[in-house]
Image (tube, one colour):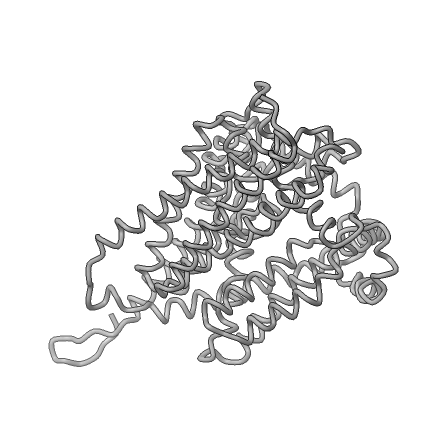
Length: 486
């Protein structure tokens, strides 16, 4: 049955509005209940769905699907993507709400040591994360810029070959996202001394400047998101105002950063260090209106719709599966066996990929279908479409239900623990980031398993060591009622 384009546009508007309304209702319910952590992660999902899914759908409908026509795609194909996304969010929300209700019925009141917040452990843990993150993010400035050849080579990288690569990947990921969130938490804690709060602000500033130098708009969004969500989480109006101010200041620079500034950095002489590009950044930021001629789109609304192409890219994932080129179990296999070195398993798939290279991942495969696109270009995709690519409608159903159940367990853990360290672990699971660079709850399944290996398990080990160390330091009473170390 061939539907009229106008009718398809109306259906897309309806299908895209339903998930936003559901997420908004869940977020508001969590906020009214005082569950700030739950409200934060649901808020991230709401923003992603509104800005990067609903808006481009409505824009495409209003502009009569110009973008799809240019790529020789049919509006009906986009309609299926939006139907899949709506189904995914409905199943996710129903599972999350049902498990949360059951958890509420099963809550029991505990007294004593179990309900005491591990304040000392959290303080040490956050300090370690902030100091390590500063080393990571500030250390980037001492590294050479990546030229075009190195960039192309990087995206053909076939994963680490031995134990040292495993440890490096785990160590970097352990610090990268948790370090950003920890910096935001420490920044709002007035009980902490000014030196550690200064280091926290430097972590955020370092990532912001590095991202601007390399045209990484996602890095800027990460910093703004961290500042905003921690501002809400800790009821800090100053941080909320700061996040708004940075957004207003950076919005006009987004097109210029991803085109002119990115190309200037890629074309820098071999061996140029990132910090040496700061003068170019300052000059370009001042003159960006002159340099912005290569930006995409004739106005802001059009430019944003052309960047928020997750739904459009997802059409290709549906086509892959329907044409018999589905990913099947391969993206999951590379993740489940992530720690196994390639020296033992040379043909091990990369996490999220259908082969042993990064280029087999969905974010690269969708771009490879477009004319005039470099083989190493990445394209945003939707978690629902990724699930369909793996196993059709049945796997989309399973992935949505599992995602809702997984997040219900994470949030129940955080609300039970009442610990800043646990909050940071949970927030790190919003940073899977195969989708537009925005933090989000709704990610492909392989990303959750990957973060279990390289974030959750190492951080739990660190927390266990800190708990054991602090327990040994805890004073106890001897039979003579004298305080002695344990």
